[in-house]
Amino acid sequence: MTGQPLREVEAYLQALSRVRSAVQRCHPGGQGLASILHLYRSRSLEKAGRIQESVEYNVHGSGCLFIEASGAEVDVDFLEEGTEVFDAWRIRRLSVSIGEESSESLDEIVAACRKLVSLGRLSEPRSGWFSAVE
Image (tube, rainbow, N blue to C red; front, side):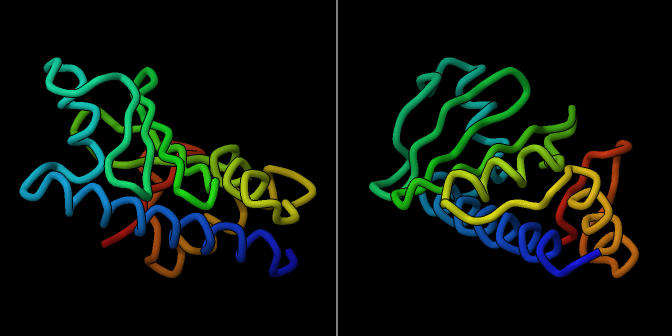
C-alpha cells in the first residue's frame, strides 16, 4: 500500500474535524454532527442550509453531506446512537471534490483505514464503516 490512501484518509479526518468544529460553534452542547440530523428530524432545521458562512449541509437518509466554502464535500452517516461513520466511498468523494488524486481502488482506502484501526486512531463499528477515535 502506498502512502496515497493514507493521505486521503488523513485529509478526510481533518475535514471532518473542521466541519465538527463549525457545527459545535453553532450548536454548542449538541450531539456533534448528529445534532444536525436530530434538529432536522424534530423539524427545527431545514433539510438543507448553511451552518455558518463556511459550511453548508444537506441531510440525507441516516447522514448528512457537509460542503465547506472551499468545495470540500464531507459526507458522513450516523449509527442509531449518533456515532459518526464513514466508508471508503465517502473518503474518495472528498478527494474528488477538492481535485486531489484518489486511490486506484476503494480496497486501498479500506486497507488504510484498517491500518489506522490497528493504531487506535479509528474504530470499525461495522464492517467497512469507520469512526474517528476521539
